[in-house]
Length: 126
Image (cartoon, rainbow, N blue to C red):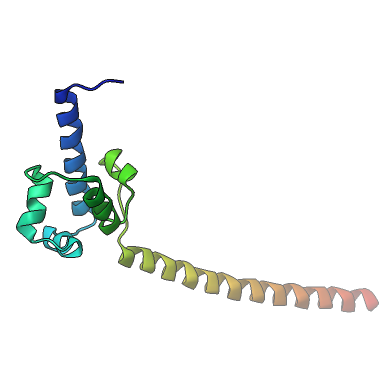
């Protein structure tokens, strides 16, 4: 498939916009991303604005900082949301708590079942 200059510019603009949208969804500031990349905030801003050429290596590094793949950046849909590490940790902690509660309930039910079984056995013998 051949692309003309206009198509290429449109695709590239969409990629830069996707980078910005993903960064904002993750609540990352330009300062944070810039720092992770070893850039100044204004240097990073030029990338998002398309004023600096974004090479493949830099795109890979940005993807790593944003914790997504380059494919995710290229195919990003604004309906996708990303969980921060804090949200993931909180979700895991909640699951662990629920698991402990369920384990306790299972033990109580097993004990109740055992008690009822013993009652039935005793009643059968009498």
